[in-house]
Image (cartoon, rainbow, N blue to C red; front, side, top):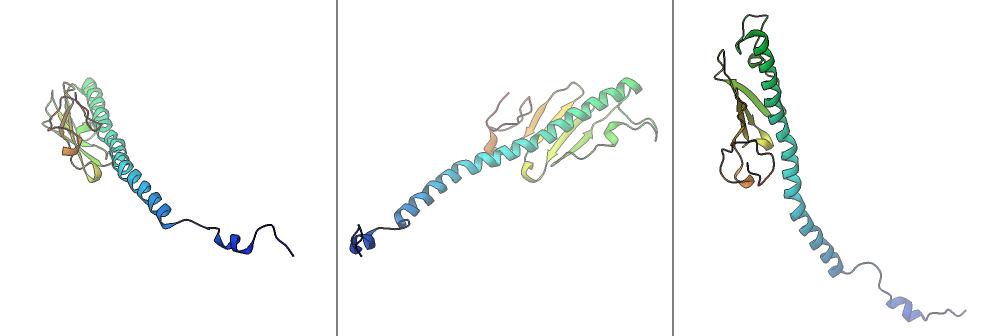
Length: 154
């Protein structure tokens, strides 16, 4: 029985990948990972920063509505409680209401976990301040706005 290809030619055909080819693929994957991973990490952090800024904006709106009804930011009785005294959780941020008086307040959102170095504030005049940022996100704070992207400025 005759075949079209000699037996020695079939034995010489390479099969699979060489070590060099595998190492090139590993190097390409490592380079892509080194570029993509920090960007992905910053993307995840940016998504969590919205919790803090939204919580401050929401609490500020609730305080203004409370003030319109009661002409004070302070709690009037056990039935008429200021929003400053019942602040809900905000993802990775803890929100506090300090320096509350009858006519003024100061709100702070302090990050924890992946947002640990972020601190945002606002007050009665809606002065939005980024009080603290991680050093890899920009120059030293404070900023006169809420920084939610790496490298942003006001």
